[in-house]
Length: 215
Image 1 (cartoon, helix red, strand yellow):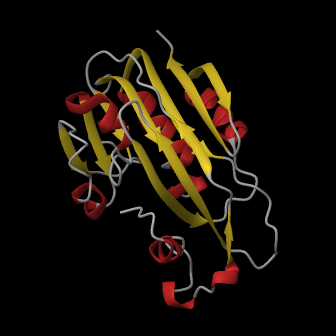
Image 2 (cartoon, helix red, strand yellow):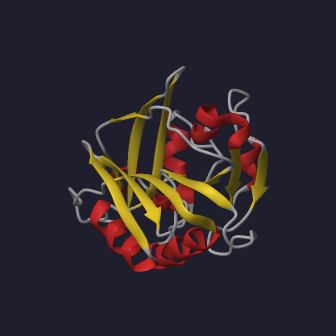
């Protein structure tokens, strides 16, 4: 689970790196200032496919039984807190969604693309586009990766304060550095996959995109 304990976050930051966790030194990890992410409730008809819905289960905390949460990690799904109440939790790879075409009206990706290799982002967009109904919406939240403050940095830690309508979640996400990756990267991929950009919200260190599949 993406825990707010610093030592656990530093270990999580090693995921996907060549070095083993105990080999990654603190000086190799860049710590970002805290991201204050406000997530209001949003209207959604029918079921919501939540990509990377393990860990804090943020979208399930908002939408409950409307949510089908998928995650590549069974452990992340097992650790979804009791406050989250998705309809289903399924171990599944977002690059190969096991749903038929046009299954969902809404899909969400909350601070999950940051954990996916950028080389796979286009495939994930294509899969989400395929399983959304015509006119379906895709909502994406993710951080804006800064420049490295030292050439030796190989990972970055994002502390987060996530404000939901009924609770506040304090946590931290550590990942390999994706220097320069931000909203523009995803806007381009979305358009290529066939999405229209409905709205874009650029905040301090993070962004939110709302996209629509054509009718």
